[in-house]
Image (cartoon, rainbow, N blue to C red):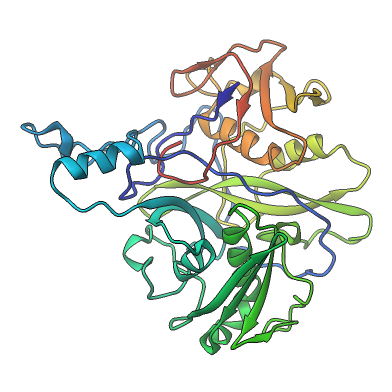
Length: 382
């Protein structure tokens, strides 16, 4: 089994990077609101996204000291050893997905190296506060979601539930951002071990609904409530189920990252086929999201899930849209794996083209085995 090898997307002041998992999905019945999506741009066949397919961004290079060349492929442990050899002070840190607001109003993860803490919940939430310690680390076009001055008064984890007590500043978020606040908190905290649900308090009082628009949260919030919800074209929520698919976005300086979107599909439709169909359909008009699939791409067979969790997809030749029709776009591969491994039974994804399981990627790499989900999303290197 091969770990998803994603291209360099963000330069972060960190050493090592791998990619992240997002959780499974449950039915979404109590949240029907949707963000106003900002313009769909389609990548024509044969084109690549600007911004560095397969790039590996390096730091400043000192010709007399190779240790100054801090490429993103070294591990945290190696980085600490380098600091120790230089006589520096080493602060233990951990790669953590922080769900932030991008310039289009979408909640998207950025994986950052933050100091380790005995209270992981408190540490993660503090890095979601505007004007807090995340400020100097924010990628271009991103902002934290919690109002300035928000403090974590207390937090605990019990039976899969993280309960967070926040100061009164928490209630000062903009009403239009209520769902984004909930989603960012939930998806950030549920990446932690033993956390499946988030409960909120404010000044010691349990919150049964959100302070601004009254979104119900008495039973807590989970990843099953979705992220970046799209329900405009859904007339019957009862006969539909949610799926999470990942599209592309870019910053003003053409740095690429992946954005999860929750859509609803018919209950009687195969979930894996539904995910592929939504990816091929592409992002919503005026969303600002991007799609790297050729319009001619089709599934030739029904998706096949093996007992070991490997999902096999067989596409037509149109999937090879790069390098004069010989290679699959790295972004297409990443979107497929990220989206399909959101399904609870899928461990990895085997891609075939006309039943051929030897696939060349636009980076020049050849894959011959299933690709597994990364450990962290949008880390700076894929």
